[in-house]
Length: 276
Ligand code: HPA
Image (tube, rainbow, N blue to C red; front, side):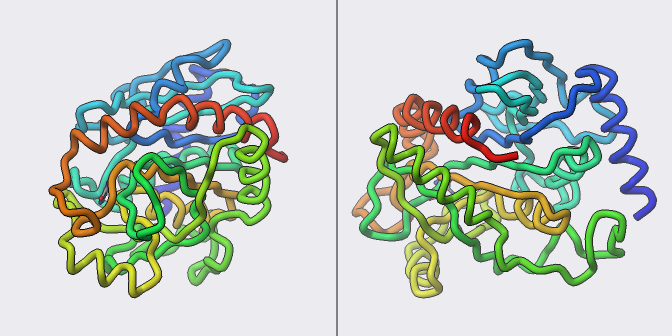
């Protein structure tokens, strides 16, 4: 694990050499559709993942693969424009490495967004959902192996992985803007296949409101490092078997595009009101 700490520090040192010493308030992981938000930061500095020591490189179409630091609504933010997914073939440890690097940069607050399939039948395509909790039945964990004690405890609490105060603040901001938001449990599937209808029925019985292929590894290590995390899903499609139709990546991208404006407005308000 000394190796992990060393890698984190080398990556963090490189990032600091590029963005300067101004402390970053909030780390942000922007999922499909929201990546553009990072293009509109003031005083921004962009770093390609490929230039950062030990960073994996993003392979998904539509994901840009770079870090953007800048000012947003009075806060200094560091955005991941494009994230690493387990289904791309990265190890869980690689998927979460950027979050650990954020910690090495002194970042204590994290906003994670994603596209997700709606499992709760009262949801509609285009809904935004504040993540209240998650379910991960995939055995692999980013923290399997020796524990990096400097980051957090071996056996750590996940009772409030998604910060209740941040959820309440986000709800209040959504209300203020007239944007309807749902709340619910996000269940992690490893992909890249979408789930089967039977898997979605099982997920519903287990208490899932939405399913997706990201966010949970990142939120898990953020919890390990006691970062305060807010997660938001965009319900880009109803999950398999909910509607009498097949799932398509195109629908996911199109809904993301359609909802982008409201999602972006909400994220701006959330960042403005984020308590540090
Ligand atoms: N399942 C898993 N991941 C997803 C989905 C889905 O239905 N939609 C967007 N990401």
